Amino acid sequence: MSDPTAHVVILGAGHAGGTAAALLRQYGHEGPITLVGEEPIPPYQRPPLSKAWLKGEADADSLALKPLEFYAEHNIDFRASTIAVSINRGAKTVALSDGSSVGYDVLIIATGARAIALPIPGADLTGVMFLRTAADAETLKATVGPGKTLAVVGGGYIGLEVAASGRALGADVVVLEREPRLLARVACETLSDFFKAQHEAHGVSFELGATAAAFEGVDGHVTGVRLADGRLIACDAVVVGVGAAPNDELAKDCGLETARGVVVDLDARTSDPNIFAIGDVAHRPMPIYGRMFRMESVPNALEQAKQAASAIVGRPQPAGEVPWQWSDQYDLKLQIAGYAFDVDEILVRGDPASAKFAVFHLKGDLVQSVEAINSPPEFMMGKQLIGARRPVDKARLADPTVSMKEVAV
Amino acid sequence: MAKITYIEHDGTEHVIDVKNGLTVMEGAVKNNIPGIDADCGGACACATCHVYVDEAWRDKTGTSSAMEESMLDFAENVEPNSRLSCQIKVSDALDGLVVRMPESQH
Image (cartoon, rainbow over all chains, first blue to last red; front, side, top):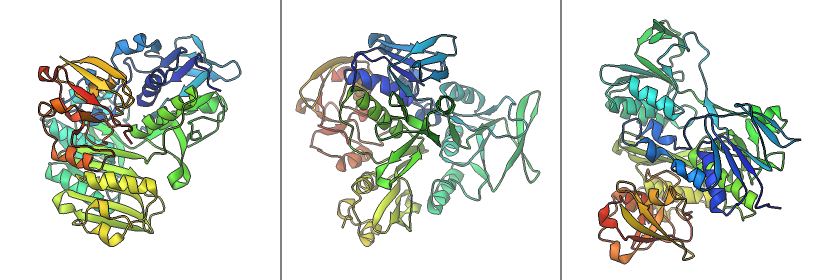
């Protein structure tokens, strides 16, 4: 059913949308491609924004997925600084923010997710920031430095990466977390404790169990965070990292099925056969766990870009993947494979005090997920074990002197 | 600047001028050459930019770090001349480099 001359319109020029456009050309799609992006620059990698880029170790060219010329050279009509306003599924058109309308044969919704704002007084003060876009990162870099105090609201991975980068830029950093421990939603206590100790050793201070009640400021600029217990944490800048919500309103408004994101199948196809949804905005099946959920990660964006592009050109789907993600903080490399669904046992391999260990989340003798700190073999092998649904010998897995090649039953 | 020849698993050759300072992986990705996925964008976190370095170039491309070595040890279809292309920096000394892609990066 694939039509090599179909006009593919991609809404959203992030990692998912940009990759889908490039893959369609790589896979030989000949029809016109229109790539609509809210930001003024072509698709780029977001992960370095909270890591290497913030520390000045990467520049705009190295962040770009492809050079700007690539789009014209490959007949991809890249519309910068433009968003879609509505989708008309009957007429197969999309209304854009510049007043124009574009017709499609195939539509890919890759509108991503947006940072969640805290609904508290002072959230509109200057100096209260998010870290989502290159422009956000630019502002943050210009704001923090030696002699400044950065308050990070939210002790998740983004918050911790920003804290590490803030220290690298010479700022004092305090992290405020509502829960009694860091990474409360995504990691086990061993890992929470480990990251807290590492950050403290690098000079970051923490306020756990602390709820931000208001941002206070002078002349419109933030000067502190008022906590619910009445204390004031003085600061020169704030980064709010309390999660993201899918930009799925366009899909809802045109009647596509949504859950916690736009519902898609294993081809990344929505309830309308001519419309796909990929990346952070998609609520997708993950067969190895027998359930559907929404992920916010680059590997997921790339995987779904492959699924949609393959389906559009009529190419076989890639082999089923194991979701994974990574984080860099200081000299720590964290690699995570899988998700900890239905876990009945947590097994730590190696010694956290050595900063080289892995946490395995098990369901019976199956690995559901692994969090590996400076431990590539545990990550690489763990990912393979998760994908193969291959049982492990727990005693061997717990013994770091046994090679990861010998832990499967 | 270095002229690099990327050879896909099916034998298709791509000859690309890559700027100094970029990595061999970036040279492929920014030119949309199939066969190098580079999911992590060069953080040495995923082993999806695996290449085989032509024998004549093994010395000039240097040796792997412990991290790279360790990632490669668990990747598929690894050979003695396997490298992660995100860990090879391009310079004039690599003008003429030839790398081949494995059948799959996953």
